[in-house]
Length: 418
Ligand code: MEV
Image (tube, rainbow, N blue to C red; front, side):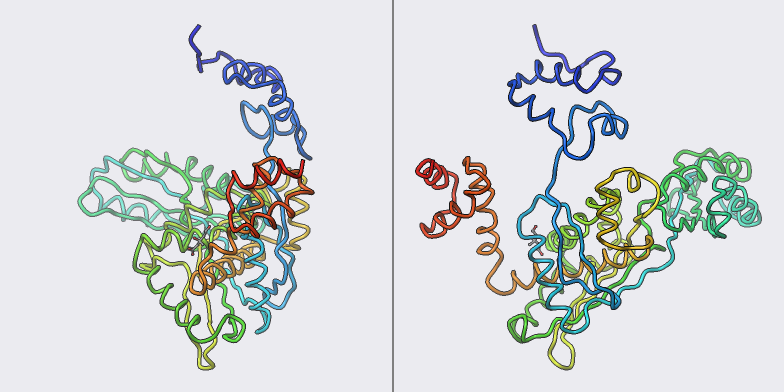
């Protein structure tokens, strides 16, 4: 019989029943099913309540970046990431930065934007005028959606109207919402959906989208650090880093990789604390469209010849709400990090992004990243070739001695050992 991915009531089944179905469909062995049955600290019943159609959980290594000083405070930074060398590079960058006092970070207020798209407007000018006259009433009505934010004198604080050239029958209303320590998606979406009918009445148009914007131009963090030239290989490296960043700022092909390096660090902390990394990614990668700078970081040589790095990045992260408070390890990661609120978290994230970017550029502008990267990657190859965890270091050393880091060499060494 032909395989069918249309499975009636899959979502209603238990994880164990789903496993049975997937086992047949994908011809999984009993030992593969046994592996899927194993979960870490998150019980399968818990996972089953977080998302849909759960069959298992998946682990990512959780490590700690050391050496961080941000705004004069020492931090150990938990990072969840599958890529070798990210945590080592980040810690190393923070060690170099701490020579000049570490990172100075600051963040704007935690203000998110909700968008209400209105189409089929009879008259754009009069719609805009009427909306601005009713602005306070719309904000007041938005604030009925969150007693918590209202109690904190936060919530909907401002409104603007966007128009688009060549599309006269459409406007977008932006509601600016101070979401305090939440990421804010839920409350902003509720506000947009709640006031959209009012906006329709006022404008005579029809609402289409009523949703948070993941571009948080009013929730931006900045960080800055000095990297002494004598600790990074001297003036030539300093100047190479400045030139490398110059390219990232104007060339989208390089900017994508440059900014990916920044997100290597930030995403890892976001994942460790169970924030929404897709939103953080989308935010970061779209920001260049409003600033005109493709690179999120900037590097300059200062009067002493040292390298000064800075980052400006929109960061919409929460320390309350969402999954951040329900997953035990995310709570523990936050405790390790020792951040009190979403602003502290954003300040550390900006520093981590800058550190990660500096580390990548320094390697790229010196000997290249492959040598360091390959010896770390070699551990993966050793594991893939069947080395036991306690044998990995020995297999890696032999591969390096033989000058060949590949699966076949690793398999031969492992076979010899066993
Ligand atoms: C690899 O994950 C990240 C880098 O490519 C970043 C960069 O090129 O700046 C090394």
